[in-house]
Image (cartoon, rainbow, N blue to C red; front, side, top):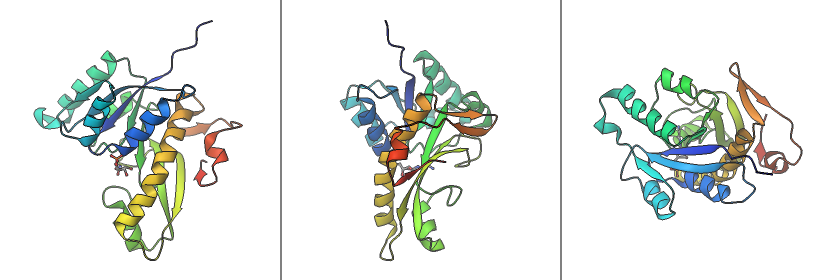
Length: 221
Ligand code: GAR
């Protein structure tokens, strides 16, 4: 009996790529339900792209500055995703806004991680926003991508405490450690088809032995 092929995932990055590394490391496990088939960066000099290359992963630099407008950039991106037979796209620190038509084409098949408990603190300078607001708990969110920046339906969240002594950097480091745990778990559940987007609503199949449910620091709806 042949084992069914795992969904092929493209990870899109713009910089350091530590979340990409967490996904790549998780996907090396034989039981992980997705294959990292391609890493794309819109910045050719992204450190994460160099790391992915060093690991022997298929990589692609798509410099957005060489394209006239988002549509042309996304046209090329779409061609590359199709050429590589990509099933799922995982944004990991990919700092480009995407047009509604592109997002629509990948509806339910493109996910993102953001370093706050959405819908709080969208956009940039997330941790500064959290400290300025005086929240006592922050965290990270994995969500399906919608045309609204950091506004798509929520898949899973992890919470971390905010300490009175925190600087933005200290909080960022604590949240990042949670991101590295949450993203592989969330991608796995999407890849297994346990979490799907149906008419704009996230549907979660109850799963016994889900990593998310066993990990007390991680919450999924
Ligand atoms: C991560 O903290 C990720 O959540 C954030 O960028 C960082 C990228 O770090 N993404 C966003 O803010 C998206 N709105 P990494 O390159 O080391 O994964």
